[in-house]
Amino acid sequence: MHATESMLGGLRLHTVCHQARCPNISECFARGTATFMILGDACTRSCRFCGVTGGKPAAEDPGEPERVAEAVGRMGIRHAVITSVTRDDLDDGGAALFASTVRAVRNAVPGASIEVLVPDFRGDESSVRTVVDAGPDIFGHNIETVPRLYESMNRREYARSIGVLATARKLSPLLRTKSAIMLGLGETGDQVIGALRDLRGAGCDYLSIGQYLQPDRSCVPVTEYVSPERFLEYGDLAREMGFSHVESGVYVRSSYMAEKYNE
Image (cartoon, rainbow, N blue to C red; front, side, top):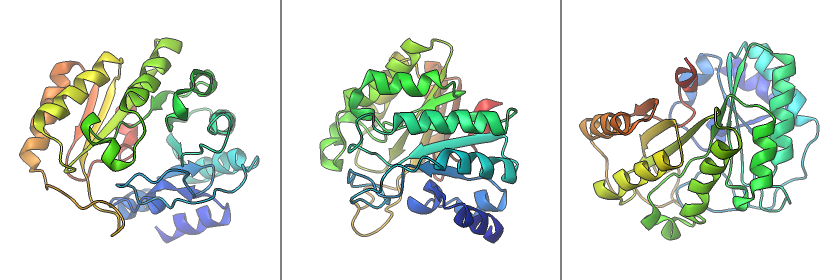
């Protein structure tokens, strides 16, 4: 784990593993995997469930894609996951840097598969197209919670998030798409099922379902700790709905064991 941290620090790279206080960080770093977070470490939004720092972001770093590609090669990563903070200050939401990073990794490590986990780009189709055209193997965008809770969590429009996934599928019908939802924020079972149906309606292929864990005191508290049995039930239901691959469990996160979705 310490070797991974040292190498990433030397390359001036951020990971969502650190920034979002992921409970699986020790396991993933020990396995030599990480989810790269581009476009800095300051988010322009303040979603009430997220541990990523908000504030004024730094300027885009044109050298970041090549450093991510170097890290993927040095770590021997076979399935690279690239995400970012939300950058509403940028005209394209950071889509061009996403695309550059995908291409840099593809050039440096041709055998690696590439997954992107993007923000909503304010619903801009041209930004989604920029990322899709770069040729990732998996295009991800997390809805995070059910529509009833969006406003209370400082999220933007639920329909916008569903639309990002639908747009990616429309632009590239064979592209595999992925999303994630957290439980324990006050949602009901019927609301979860409704959200899963919305995802399938948008053509979403892959799904992660995990327990919300409060990152720090500034975030909303956990409303409920969902039983492992209920996670299994939701997972079975999602498969019946037609999701190609589902991971559902307390410590499941969208980037955890991400390579399993690509097997």
